[in-house]
Image (cartoon, rainbow, N blue to C red):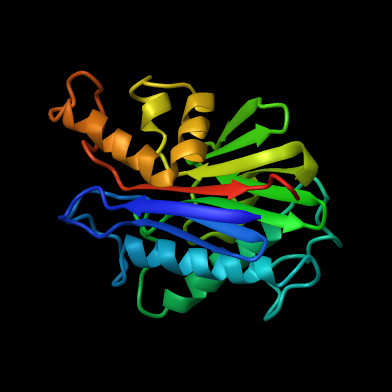
Length: 251
């Protein structure tokens, strides 16, 4: 798997709360839930820290391999108690528990606005590719046939409760059936789902032919034509935007 990514801060007034990372056979993309400035998070670290901490811990747990997880058990090991149709759930639950333990002594994790994030994860497992989608970020599967399948998660976000991992959408696809997989935060999907400037297939083609930076550049161009959000009403005029393009051709 070859991975290229791009990420861009939405506003100079706040840190980029997206996070992206990849290693051999794995990739993660997270979108920290950006609440209005001044919101009491009950946390001294902030949302960008949470997304970064959860992303690095999740990637590390994915890289542990399909066997029992390293460190204290926080969920049944995959392949033993987890159905094969629910890959990566135990990894995410463990990572959420790790982050909660890391700041429980200094922060109030019971506050409803405690830092949270959307989560996308991808893992190559031999001839198979596992994916996980939690909350409103998007995975695009471009199949060998050229068909593009869009998968966007539901209303549940990763926060302080490891059990929320059970709400993730997961799946497994033969690597031979894939050309590429795109992993996008909602700031990077606007060309398709907010501005209707292209289709999901068109978005995948733009990223494949011109790179992930081109998706963000064209998104920013569209946003600048509507600086007040009248044509395309949206909570943030410019949102953090991140996407990873994972290529499988030739595997």
